[in-house]
Image 1 (cartoon, rainbow, N blue to C red):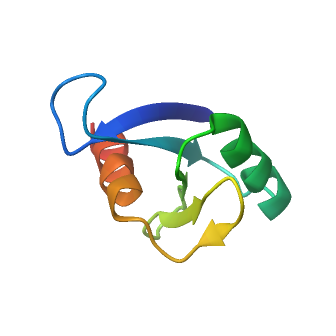
Image 2: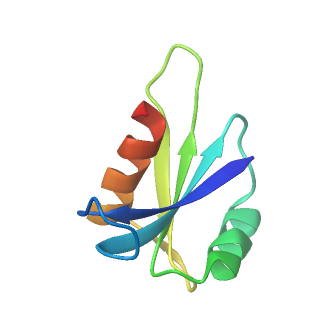
Length: 83
């Protein structure tokens, strides 16, 4: 499992809106995702599950719960996945 902290909406370090991005090659439990989000201590943590012959699956967690969508964490995930 690899993870990054990405500042969305900026080209400068320590600016923009930070999000944690975790790239997964296999699924992990919701409980583990929640614990990772707590440990990251950012407003949102995005989990990108890479799947063979399918688009990646994105999920977003705060330190409190899973949420339906997070724009800046989605942008951070796309940047991480595509670069």
